[in-house]
Length: 358
Image (cartoon, rainbow, N blue to C red; front, side, top):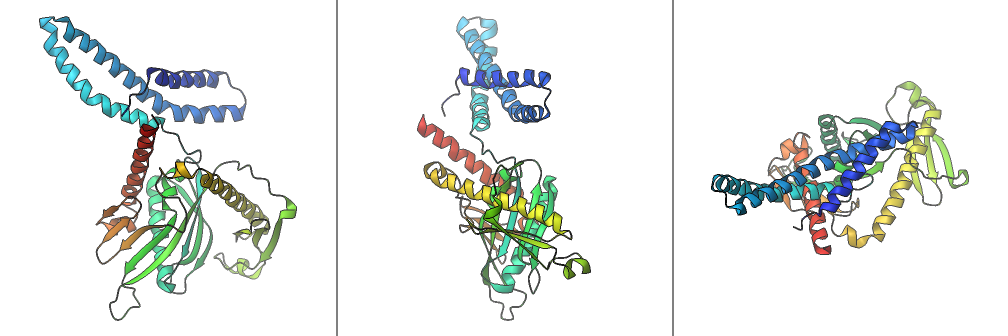
């Protein structure tokens, strides 16, 4: 791995100090918020960069002592040189990872959509299992989840469930979940003990703050309808649910709260998020070469994972990861092991791509 140049490290430190100075002088709320976010992003990078610069300086000084021939210092300095040469590559890689180009949406909240795929009632039950897994994971991570819309399966689970998830770095962790999730198990309705294969699709859409997407009134159609969701008698007897269709793209967003006014606002917000994701996907498609160095495409049609219950096995097909702890993963308690493995693999591929460029 190529060493990071001192000028690159100093560049990051200089920017951090500029942001720190401007924070003390800023008076506009928007500027303070923007600077605070950049400060928070740069701080761990700068701390590690300074640690690396200090270690490099100590190595240089220790090597000079070894070369000096001073019998009282040579042995001690030689030991220090060995220790520093062992720790420096690890430190270099840590800084390299911190300096990798960030997805602008990694810190964004998300809209998560789960839909039952092939497999009838069993697929809906599996979609319900996945949503419980994610809900537990969100709880562990300290994130907030709010169900926007849900259609329950005839035998339980969900035909479809859409939820907003907010917190620190949600999209950066959850973007890997997009795609087709396949389950292999014996359904409760199976009398012969045969293993069935069903599937559910997951879509993870970034929901950054202040999405700047223009929606012209003439480009949308707004329909009101009777809600089928939970909420008591009032919801089910008034046309409070709202569906907004974006005519140029065919994208649809719905909301089923008690208030029609609230539903209009929420449905419009969801529509803007979908339009933002569409724009993002088009840009991703234009960067096909860069995408090849990442894990998967985030395409909801891509088969990403298999959950085999008889063998207590989960396999993530993108990175060839197989874990025999499905019971702990599907409960949400060990899902982070899978997420972190995907993040680590993505970082490794990006580092390799940088090496190839240099």
